[in-house]
Image 1 (cartoon, rainbow, N blue to C red):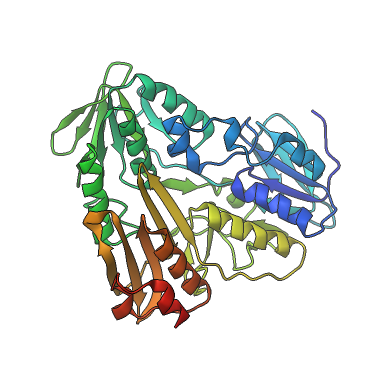
Image 2 (cartoon, one colour):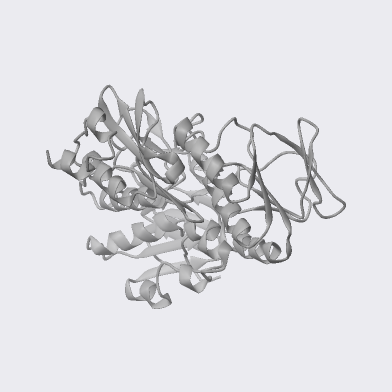
Length: 418
């Protein structure tokens, strides 16, 4: 295989964070060589639409691409696709670091960025390897799932998180019989308050989806191909297609190989607010990292979001160039579940009070979260204006008085102005 003489920056992981980091280096004036390597054979693409527009058939693979093929050449970014880094050694004694891929390509580097993402958490139950049991993380997963969905009639989604609910909505829109099975006692329990979890359950059931809570999957049945999903309480659900969406596991293997600190509790490669790892020549960004709380700086969190990956990648690029940047960032997320649009700003974990603005039954409402009287987050369902006002308040470090914010007759914008 050809060898590169680059001793510039090697970016391992060609997802959202990796592409943005490489582009940010060029925007900041870095003229040194940049190599971006990804394990998938496809050109770097957006992942969020996979469980929504792509699965529903309203987007294709070409429309998901981050950049045109010529963009990488124009920005002098060497893109290596379809190869995984097998061995990695850091720079030492004035010599460059060296990565070796699974096909024998060698990639020298002076600086390293890990944007390796995460992989789907697997279910360790009998029958998990049956044909028809799918996971959804990459484009190939989505292509296979979309083909199977076209001919399926009974779909079981294991996991009531955002990916599961988005996929359930897409399957239901295609006329499939859909059942969501969640082991916890409510949907999206790690991210939203009980009132939002209950709203989502009722909203999906109103649209024809069956939601089972709490329900634990103990095995999949079938001969060669999945035919049923068996639950701990003895129920057996017929299924000709299963999607498992029970979270992700950050990819830390390479980081551990080169001795970087990794967090065993939160999960991920430990970075500081500037995206630097425990080695001064290495930064990391995206789903693979455990970072300080982006607003308070207290404790570690792992953000699984595109906006978070983009913000952190920009910070990481500045760090590699020895520059300072604003590291305060208000996390924001979104989830489109059919005609339900949930927008989240801030992190609600640790709230001691919340107010519901509007009526959940109307499918247009917002939940504002507070801690010690200060606004910390919002969940907005089909209320984009309220979402934007709260996001602006959080970004500027302001709060909205809870007693007035809960009154839907009072525009939030007037409270922010006041």
